[in-house]
Length: 359
Image (cartoon, rainbow, N blue to C red):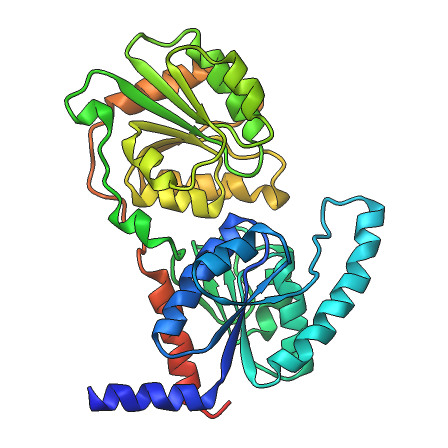
């Protein structure tokens, strides 16, 4: 115990802050926040980068994290005017970060939100790390990977990535690790619970499939549709008595835990969380995802768990019903083997690196 405390004190003296870039979607800021909490538990001082007024700020504050706002903006898939606005926002963010990063190390959780942090670390000659959740690394990850101290991977990548890589799994919220899994079909009740889980991208097409399916499904099937705020009113207006519609779930582990079948996009975090709960899943990859990364994510999940992959192009409610029937006939298998404590591996790696040298 004495040796452990001394090691922690040495770490705290070696680095004052870990600056974490968790800007983006839930697939960025939730793993970042979970890892930030673990780093604080180990004695690190953490600063969490946010955009003022965006969802990552409220999530960081909910976790009790110190926040620092910058003006990071997305580039790919944007209009020409939006792309032109990226440059001044990037310069302003880097200049604002330069003072903060002077005695810190960086930990970027992928995407455009990590770019200012990585540039600032390079300018100040500070070490930085990158976390990449997808099987096809994003452009920011590919550009900075060779310059990073280490790249942590949520899943095995499709093609080799330059730099030092470590497969850790994806940090997930502790509620998913402790969630009760009580599918209706397996709990002695007659109904079969099916959850449509659209996520932040491409929910509308999944909502349409749910509405098509509700008119032709067996009487013992019940649907829950997490429709998203933008499409909630339409879906709620068109649903029938056996369909429940919600705008957004703050406790997705409860809805997933109750479901017999989950129909979902194949974002890295959402897919990982579903598989951690050992669910039968139909993945419909978002066809416009950059570099088709959702398709590659889905193929990996299908290998490690009870999942089917359906391409969206030409997909019908009848085909969805056939896939559901196929999965319902699948016998229960042992729990899907995915890393459940990735945040501990990441934090332990940082502690080891920093403890072995004066940074």
